[in-house]
Structures are given as structure tokens and as C-alpha cells.
Length: 247
Image 1 (cartoon, helix red, strand yellow):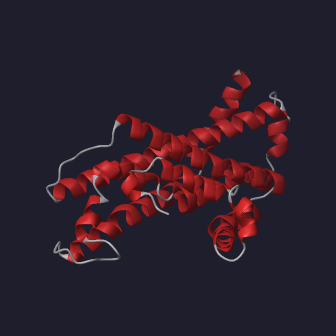
Image 2: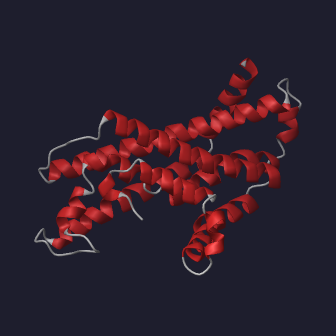
Image 3: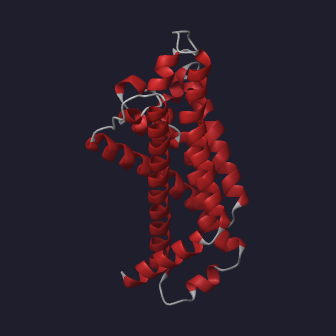
């Protein structure tokens, strides 16, 4: 266990000092804030609060969706797709990057065995994604609080159980995508190809298969049911407030 701990600590040490991790985290936060809070709030302000429908919702509904009691939905709503794609990129960079930099042999010639190195690196990845999940919830809470105070709305948070289940679900979704990226990076011994294939899969192939299974080719339904993105979306929907569950 001490070897695994040392590998995990070393991987986290490297990750903190590499700009790629911070860039990915920043991109995830920006996407979450823009689509979860900024766009709905600007739509609410442009609607004038007179009941006019804006993008399929009244201004009052848009405002309600940005308040603190919707923290879980706004925090993990993008995890199955956009934020998940960034987690996949992180996994590919952490594992495939060692092959690009030629440091794999150095790792394997040290005292820990191959299995312990792998476990330690995977632990570092899931710990990093745990921290990222916490950052997403924290920044979401800050934005929701600011909007509530600006609009004179009460600051009411989700229950402890809802927060815990939402946080755990978000972490699990990111961990799934991150490990998938790690597998691609380690298998293909690089970074560019795993990232390209992974992002195309997350943003394109899964959506296409889901659309075909739901319309023209019902025979693809069993395939759709085991797709990682589809199951991630189902998990996220299961912990969202009933009023915000998307079809």
C-alpha cells in the first residue's frame, strides 16, 4: 500500500504542475457556468419578467432554474457529455502522455511493480476528478447564491441527501469517462489519437446511435442501453429534481 500511495502522490504532484489539468478544469467550470447560469439568467433578464415565453420557458421558470435549490441539476447536468469529454481527455493525457514523453520505462524500472503503478495512477485520476467535482459544485453554489441575492430570492439549498447523492453521481460519471480515457491512452500509447476518438465518440457516435435506436432502427436499442454516455445521462437524471429531469 505504501508503494501505491507514493505513486498516487507523485502523479498528483505532476498533475498539479502541468497546465493541461488546469486548462481542462477551467474549461469545465466555464461551460458549467455559462450554460447552467449565465445563459438562463440573461434570458430571464431579457424576458422582462412579464410571463413571455423565452426558449420554451417563462422568465420566472428560467430564474427558478438558477437558484440554489437547483444546484445539483446545474452542477452535473453537463457531466454525461461535455464535462465527461474533458474528463476523458484528462485520463488520456495522464496515461498516454507518459508514452509520448518516453517516461514509461523509467516508471517501470523503479521499485513498484507494474500493477501497483497502474493502481496508483488510477487512484490519482479519480482523486483529481473528485476535486474537480467539488470545484464544479462550489462555483455553482457561488453563482446560484449571487443570482438569488441579486433578485431578492431566498437562498434555499437542496437537502443533505440530495447533495450527497448528486455529488456522488457526478463523481462516478467523471470517473467513468476518465478511466475510459486512461484505457484509450494506455492502449494506444499516445495522446492525440485517444483524445480524437474519445471526443468523437462522446459528442458524435453515441448521439447518432441513440437517435437511430429511438427512431428507425429499434434493433439497436440493446446497444444503446449499454452505451456509457446514455447510462451516465440516466444516472444524472435519477438524482435531479423531478421538475428538471430531461427526457
